[in-house]
Image 1 (cartoon, helix red, strand yellow):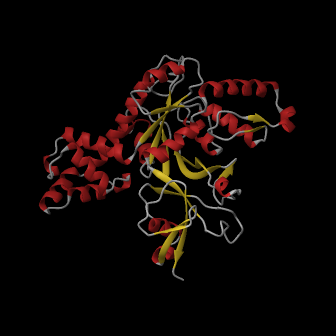
Image 2 (cartoon, rainbow, N blue to C red):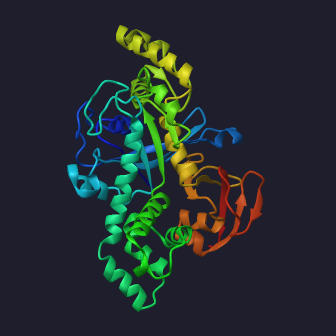
Length: 396
């Protein structure tokens, strides 16, 4: 799974990326600091099942803190976009094409209104962040339209002459954008388009591009810089019009860096942190002042929002669930690690899907699955639930 971070320059994308991954990236108050896309490992957070079994897990991938399990996902931070990106302005086509593989997008918006449309710093609240939301959606739609219209006459003529299935042909043409047959069919049906693409007007093609983009690249808006004075006003004004989560990447980054250096204990997504008493003497006056500000911020906001954004894009927009492999009589792997794995699967996945996720041989030789919690056997068509613990039994 790949989640792309998008937005105009200088809105805190790199700060969000570093806060989510602790990867070393350059952060600066100027446009186009990021040129080549950065890839890193972020995490979604779930309640670990180990507590129910009175044990402590030992993850092979990700980590677990106070029975909160952090499961890795891949994040992609592309360079900031500017109006006209879909036409190549600011190397826009190159940056957009970096997003081909993304399953979903997080749109980082400077909700404090302190960066203009080109990413230059301006007085806070002087720029309307709603303009950034509209501009990015338009650039993405125009990007899809450009790809859709490439060789369109030949495509539509071939479909009509050979009497090809429109949805299959469209999915094949746009497969690089993660458009599959289901997305294509639902988009065509929702727009009530004819079965002959040669008759579709330019207006209908734009509507189709927009529909395909919405379905194949779902978006969550991260209303960043909510810690800036006055930013809450913009957020309250826009929150009912757009699907957005208030966040402060800088506050989250400060907390994670402090936790990394064992100055505080902090679990991402929580509403508090604790200073490590044994290292309290290492805190300078500036750091203590910063932590006091962060403490007040968390009291008011309950969370930095970064973890909430990651969880929402994966579990609500992409509709994934977390499933743990385990044995009824043994939760350890051959190396002695307890509940070492947690996998993310699409909602609606079955026990057989899970078996193949673990290993092809387990799927090919599937006999049954066992729900480890109640020790009851289930068949291959059993629909998995979030946080299920499943043992796969296969022929040897």
